[in-house]
Length: 46
Image 1 (cartoon, rainbow, N blue to C red):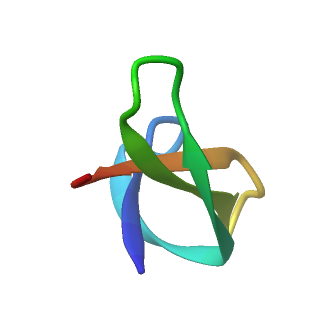
Image 2: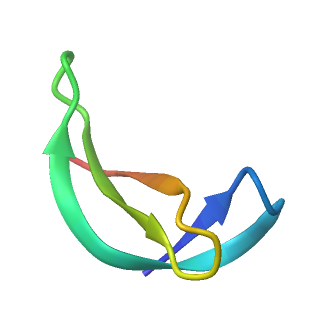
Image 3: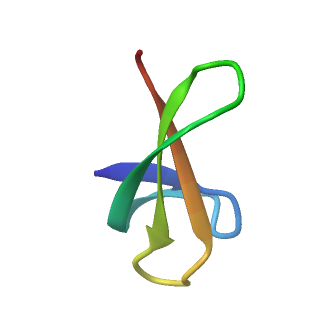
């Protein structure tokens, strides 16, 4: 799964993505950047 890394300003591969749910019911994937270790989020559908 790819997500945008804000630190590197590029689309990077996400390591160990986990599904999370925000307060208003939106679903997302949360993981770490493969190259720098920054936390990445990718918002998905319901």
